[in-house]
Structure formats: structure tokens, C-alpha cells
Length: 538
Image (cartoon, rainbow, N blue to C red; front, top):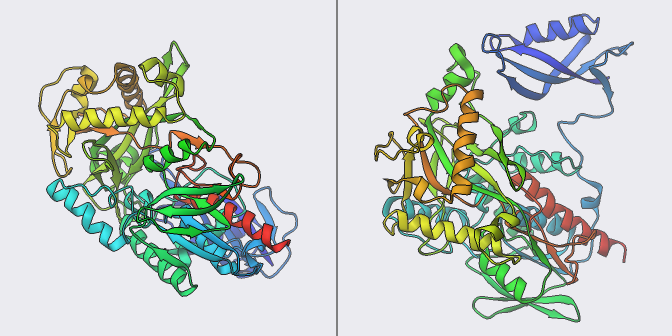
């Protein structure tokens, strides 16, 4: 018989045998009655530095009925560690139906996987390059300051998430969630992602996983094309019927899944010209904070920092700043990358942005995180930009162009020591930094709009009250973190299709419906499921 038991506290130095004994005692069983015990969920609890421990759930197999069941225990019909394939994706449909998917990020890749394995003919179009070639282009940007506008941190196979931290944590609840994680394991991820409360893959591992997915899709017969930007949609009688690529090819389609990611600004402009309904939405902008990882470890773990069972420490911080327009304006950390590095992430010539990444081991000397301020469409209008569905992009671009100019018209990062920023005094001195191609000492108060800079400074002071030592001479702020999420939302109906163009499925981060790798993958699968259901019922 199989049971799940939760809220088991496990010490850093505690053995598996000790945990099994405690579980047996809690259930009034002998140790011998527990035939097997497997951790199914694990989270670190570091709130008390004198008692850092894991909070775990276990799946246990026992040789007798547990009666009565304690509140933290329940009977299982089957293991949750091996989730069954969602029923909709077991259905086979005819290959005469053709789906074109625009974008090979997580939304596009998982949509392609689900459709191709169900029998639908798939063409997957990616404007950037394969993940291996893309690495070289990113390397040239970091080493020489040379930008390829079609192959960079944001554009290319795997999407923007491949060159961040590979974070798989999400707040969404959906039946497809566990299956997405299981598919990552299938293509090469370690099984720990199925149990960690905050799982991550790391850029180095994601590169291999994405490559394995590509090989599988090719074996399934997917027409997988790189360096193929889609410039237009062909629409007849209110339904999309084909796409036109940058080289002029027209590809007919019964369905078009739009999975472009949040930086495909030219695509969004063309969609607006076509009259596809969309709206401006809130997002956030700010800077990247870079601290020594050892400092963050010490703040979070105290004298247990460096323990073999503790990886590089993370943080997730929020602060509310009084605001005359919003009442409260949010300031929060974003995409925290332990043991990682800050990377240049522009996509347009003459504009500059930054992002963060780390590899699977998170073993680097530096921790970095976006520190960003909430931005609403109303803020942008007050800033002086004309109200328009794409006004968020206009504002992002304005900041990125100003950032490029502040760095001397180079793809470098305007940088200010954290203590100088909160003291509003530009000394020109910087803490040591790992950033490439170059960090240039800059007064960020002269770069950022004051309605961003003021709450940012107040938020940092609030962060230091929660994490004493966060404000330090050892940390820098690098500008500008502008690509936190899509500034638009493409309107869609319950069938996952555009509200005014049938057959067009806007999905993932770019369409405004996801906020990370897993939520984007789930959203792509939801579109695939809608297409499969439609043809299965015919």
C-alpha cells in the first residue's frame, strides 16, 4: 500500500535511516513495515539560522493499512513521481492537419512535442540559430561587444530562458505541470527537479536538453527551420491560413501557434497593423544587483554556509512603496541567479539591456538578481508616451537606447555601487564585477526616470531591513533590466485562439500569458491540447 506523508523536518546532517525511523514512529509502525521510502518534495527552511533544515514529503510503501491516518498522511492510488501522460495527448489524429509554430522557446517546443506525438504535421520556425551556434554569438557579444540582432540572449533555439538560470519554479497550478517536469527529465534533466520546491536546470544543462528535444522532434518528422523569421500572417475571412517568412516563402497552415517570446517587437508591430486585438499590460523595469555569493550565503545561512547539502543561497524580496498614483508601488527581486553572472541581453542595434544566468552547479563567485519596479500603462502615459497597445515597448526601447548612450555608445553596462545609489552620490568607484564586455561607472540617477529610481532606492533600503547586509560596498547595480515580462497581452478566447483571428493561438510569455519556462511550456501544451481536441472530435 502506498501513502504520502508531508511536513517532515529533516536536519542537514540527518541520515535516511533516521528519517525512516521517525516516520515509522509518527505512523505507529515498525521500521520493517516500511518497505520503501522516497522523498517526493523538498524545500529548505532557513528562517532560523540556528535550525536550518529541509521540509520534506515522502511517498512510502507499507505492508499494512495505516489506521487512523494522521492529518499529514494520505493514501495514494499511484506514485506522483511518475505522472501519467495527460489523456488528451494519448489521442491520435490524422497527419493531414498542419500546424505552424512560430518560436522554439519552451511554449513552442512543448506545443510541437505534444502535436507531433499525437500525429499532427508540424512546422517549427525559429528566427534565431540552433542552441550550439547561438552560444558562440552570445560569446562574441560578451567578449567583443558585437551584437547579432537575430541570435542573442533573447532570440534562438530554447528561447530567453535557456540563457538565464533554467528556473522551473512556478506558482501556476495545472494538470500539465508535473508532466512538463517529467518531460524535462526524459530529455536529460536530473530527477531532483521532480521534488525540489525551487527546481532549476542551469544554462549548461538546458543547452543539452533543448538539443535532445530537437533530435526527438526531427525523428517525429517535424519540419524544424532555423534562421527563419516570420514577417507576416496571411488571413482570409477572419482566419489565418498561412505565414510568410523573411525570405518570402509562404507556408500554408490550419493552425498557427504564436510562441515568439517577449522580445519579438517587430512581430508585435505587424500583429497590430493586421488588427489583431491586443492590450498594454503592466510589467517591471530596474537594474541587476551583483553581490559576492559568499556574502549572500552568510546572510541566508549564517554559520551553516558552505554545508555540503546547501547549494548557493537564493533570495526573494518584495517591498511596497507609497505612491500617489497607485497607492502602493511594488519593488521586488526578479530572476535571482545564485553563483551566476550578469549578461548583456540587447536585441536591437544601439540599445542595451542586461539579464542574469547561472549554470547547474551555481558555483560562481557572484550572485545576481533583477531589482525591479512595477510599471503600469498609466505610468507610461504620465511619462509622456502616447497611449497605445505597444506603448510599453516604446518605453522599454527609450530606456535601452538611453542605457546604450550612457555606456558611451557601446554594449556595456552603466554601473553604480549599491551604497552610492542609495546615498544618491556618484563617486565613480565600483565594487569588483564579473560583467563582460565592460561595466562603466555611471550615475544611475541620471539614467533612470526618477519615478523608477526613487522607489528603487526605497525598496533597496527595505530589502536591507529584511536581509541585513544586503546594502554593502561590495555590491554593484547594473543597468538596465527591462525585459522582465511582455508589456502586451494578445487577447484570446477560451479555445486559446485570438478573439478576432481564428486559427491563431497566442501563447507563452510573448503573448502575455506566462512568466517563466514551465508556465510557458504549459501554455504551449494548452494550445496543442485545444488543437488535438478539435480534430479528435471530427
